[in-house]
Length: 286
Ligand SMILES: Nc1nc2c(ncn2[C@@H]2O[C@H](COP(=O)(O)OP(=O)(O)O)[C@@H](O)[C@H]2O)c(=O)[nH]1
Ligand SMILES: [Mg+2]
Ligand SMILES: [Zn+2]
Image (cartoon, rainbow, N blue to C red; front, top):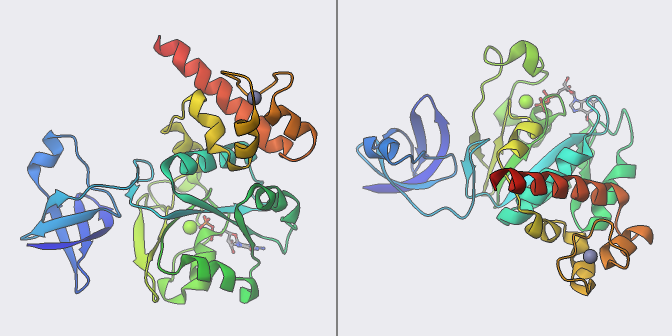
């Protein structure tokens, strides 16, 4: 009997890093009957090349399938493709709910400066890194990955693999893959693989998992939502209205903070849109 961590799951095989070795395992038959799927990132017990036990998870994602994350590095290109702030804010909120630290890397600053929207996130209290094809700005990103388990999330073409290759040249990931529509299945393997880092920790790429798809599988209740926007916290606390939705109520402290420019309009719009979506789901369930 040994313990280890699943670093790759593909075609019914789980690759378990035991520290000494990486062992290809099957899962116990009973997991399937119980509806349990081992995930990349899981701490497991293995016996004779079989995963026999999954240790409790601190958090999990079913799409992309990954568990026990410390942080998600959102990779956003300043252009080509254009950023979508609604989807980004939705995924950041999901991270906050799961207690996973969101970090932002903005790529393609050589084509278009990403500082104007990056500063919205800096002001909200997130770490934001700005990179170009030259490696000179990469050290700060490298440092924040050390010793942590980090999942990279971002749409096809934003530069996830390019960034990982610059940081860890040994990986030699393929870049410039054809977009989903043309290439899915044939050119893109949709799986999550964790790479162990030279100074401890793991980093995982998520090829083929777009931000829209990830958002679809996670629901935040409307009552929880304001707590998933970290820069709202001081104003939510001060808001005196019971059951305030913090959207348009006159005298709401959050609404006032938006008016005074202390909370970015774009962040608040994302909040309102998510709130309305969440409210709909509840009606439908009733
Ligand atoms: N100009 C510029 N191009 C970049 C940058 N980062 C990535 N690219 C290009 O964008 C394309 C997609 O990159 P890739 O790493 O495959 O994106 P992924 O789908 O997120 O893994 C490739 O042609 C890269 O060379 C950047 O910072 N600046
Ligand atoms: Mg890639
Ligand atoms: Zn309010």
